[in-house]
Length: 107
Image (cartoon, rainbow, N blue to C red; front, side, top):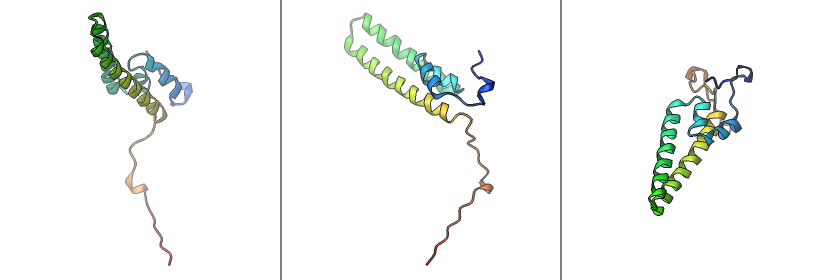
């Protein structure tokens, strides 16, 4: 599945990344951040499974705890997808020889 539109100029839409977070780790996969995507996706699916299991067993205290953790992870996923889309294509490596700082002190 190809999620990159060549006509879009190598940028990613933050709104689309956040919308894709409705699927477990959809925003992370959209921004091509696969390792965090697998970790977040596995966490969301696991927490959802245990919340459902505790709901069936009528253990509402533990179910609510899992749902709060799921909500936290979902919020983190949204924020991570937003930042990943905004920073997509940002070159992290910088040649240190091209960076210079000049300080002048006038008295």
